[in-house]
Amino acid sequence: MASTKKGNRPSYIRAAKHETAIPLYEYFCNELSIALGKEVGTGEFGADMKVELLNNGPVTICMDTKNKE
Image (cartoon, rainbow, N blue to C red; front, side, top):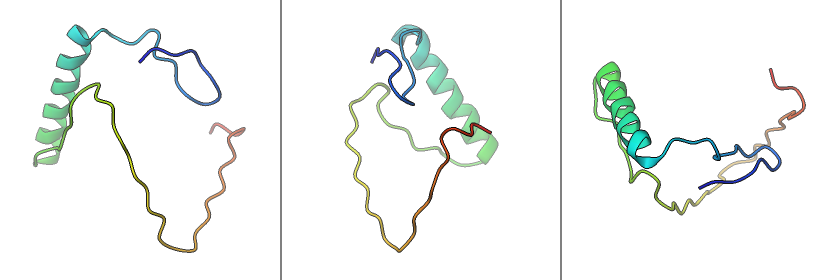
């Protein structure tokens, strides 16, 4: 998914091609599984994901996006 930077979204213009990225992704997931001592759930690399969010509680988090510390 290539895009130019807009707001706080990252740009994927210089992202690795699938031939490079997929083995790196699989290596990372495997190393993380070893470090944690349990299986790490994964999905399909590069898939179009549908995400649903349910807020449950009276909590508001204010983020200062100008302060990048």
